[in-house]
Length: 139
Image 1 (cartoon, one colour):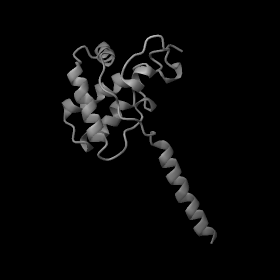
Image 2 (cartoon, one colour):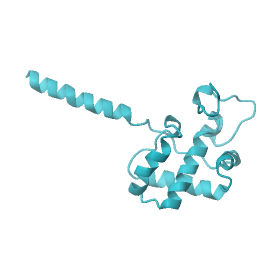
Image 3 (cartoon, one colour):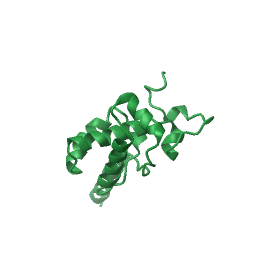
Image 4 (cartoon, helix red, strand yellow):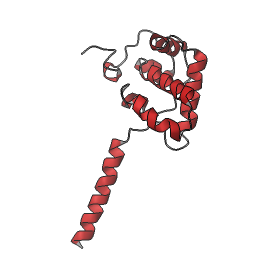
């Protein structure tokens, strides 16, 4: 009896730890906005509205085939390239598609909080500093 209870607790504990380690589910990204294109072009000058739309569409279509979309802000800029190295082959992304998805995700997750949630920037609304990446706001 004790052994079966202990086994049950170990199994439940492992499941709980596994679920906690997986990023929380996110929302479907909004449409590509001019602000998002500007954000992307600060990092990738060749980024266009069309390339970001392609990256967004690939992200939404291919990632949702197997799991819910992750919360893009819950994962750091540094971790996304490693995640996509693993996931791109599973999603059957070629090298160009992999790049498009990565550029879209990194540009979108670094938008101010209001733009991230709505797909547009609202004037006179200050984003929550806790939601911005560390490289945007100095410590």
